[in-house]
Image (tube, rainbow, N blue to C red; front, side, top):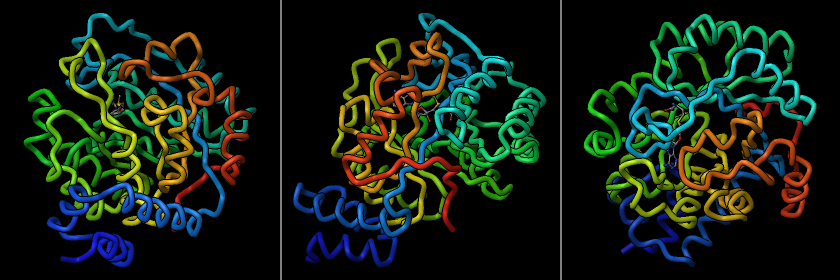
Amino acid sequence: MEDLTRLIDRLETDQVLNREDFIRLIREHTPDTDEYLFQKADRLRQQSYGNEIYIRGLIELTNYCKNDCLYCGIRRSNRSAQRYRLDQEDIMECCRTGYELGFRTFVLQGGEDGWYTDEKVCRILTSIKHDYPDCAVTLSLGERSRKTYQAWFDAGADRYLLRHETATPEHYAKLHPPELSLAHRMECLRDLKEIGYQTGCGFMVGSPFQTTEHLAEDLLYIHKLRPQMVGIGPFIPHHDTPFAKEPAGTVNDTLFFLAIIRLMLPKVLLPATTALGTIDPNGREKGVHAGANVIMPNLSPLSVRKKYMLYDNKISTGEEAAESIDSLRKRMAAIGCQVIVGRGDYKK
Ligand code: SAM
């Protein structure tokens, strides 16, 4: 049987494996083969982006959500969540702070909250683009119509993050309420890409009921979609959700999938996520060594940070906080990387 390191070589050359080979790699990888994989991913990151690490200022607009995803702490049926939303003025204030700190991408993320009408989001985008023409804006506001995505793109949005969560319909149905479907999520992703957004999909590592076959399907979907960004991080339980007692995903599994994705898409914008930083204080550094090249510190107003609790113990201080950017710079410098001031676009 083919040695696992040869399989990793083949993944690097072909940028994909067939379903059986992905399953074998996921089942049989060892600390030694991981080391081999991480080195390749680290090298590819450097070939694509040198020693540059891109930063994004994450502004968590709202924790109101009409959806009821079983894993998520801001799901609508969590009565204990203290709800908040930021208005245009609050958001502009975050951008002002972020710009001064050196952020040139703002990520507007939130629950699916109808208060943010198409027009309101267009006004916010126009205002950010007017005041900060050298900045990129990423939206992560969930599933909307193609018409809305087009309007937001026309108003200046550059990128859109919408994790597909899992590429297997049966698994999707176990993580989401019946009114949500994988088919619609994927339609949104296709629309976003066609409109011209730098588009990001992704999934949680170690989500409840996840199998090796599901993960292989996620990788095949990513290969097919060819997104410019991929967001993956460990699933972490939230005590007020039906998955409160489920185990969290692991650091090593997350690093393993980050590295595989870097081999599949050498140019992809790949964040070392907050969730990874939450389960490991050195998560960002480890993520970078496994191929990640993006970090998204929290730029939300301090007064709401604790309210955007997607999972238990979600970090929002220390190097996770935008205002601590200097210590993040130092930590990245210590591993030979440089946090850059710039939009940090996808390199074609
Ligand atoms: N509403 C938008 C959407 O659904 O894309 C954006 C906000 S949503 C809270 C952002 C991401 O948080 C989701 O795509 C999901 O993968 C992640 N997330 C939610 N609950 C989580 C948990 N318990 N552990 C890890 N990640 C979680």
